[in-house]
Amino acid sequence: MVAGLSILDDGGPDSLSLAAVAGRLDIRAPSLYAHVDGLAGLRRDLAHAATIEFGEVLRDSVLGRSGSDAVRSFAWAYRRWATSFPGRYEMTLLPIYPNDNERHSGARLALGAVKAVIRGFGLDDEHAVLAGRSLRSAMDGFSRLENANNMGRGDHDAAFAFLVDLLIEGICQAAATPAVRS
Image 1 (tube, rainbow, N blue to C red):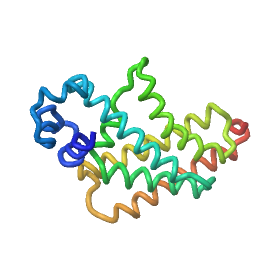
Image 2: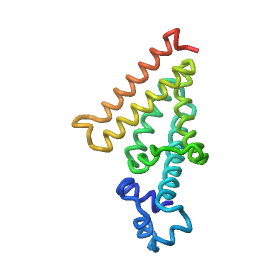
Image 3: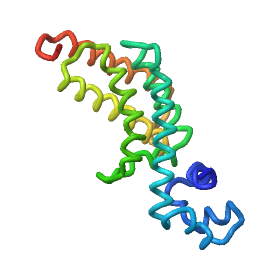
Image 4: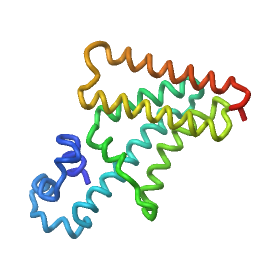
């Protein structure tokens, strides 16, 4: 697992192959079949490991926090991890098959962190889901643009702080609207 994660860190998901992992481990590629179900199995296992790691980072970022503080902590933890480990981050976004209970349980860690962030604003269930999706989409978009070096010039930290403040303002405004409060 560590060799595969290291390959993701060095070259991203496109660099992942059984031959590359075998080379890292200084073994022959056929030996890996005793441990993983081919390249698809390796990708699934690495996606699961990365999702668990990311979920734990996000969960830890919101522990003991609420409201704006929770959003800021979540957002900065999200960006820091996604840009520090862009290959692993891409793996967290691979589709999860309906019968893959292990990957679903790993994904629930990150989802739980999103729910914890939004819960403190008092939105009804429907709007809490919308706010959570908006938060996640903004974090994903910013992180992907930064990972692809498509942010342009300027202070990326300031741009990110501005984005987070916009999100907080929008969530607070939604929470203040009678139709979206619980």
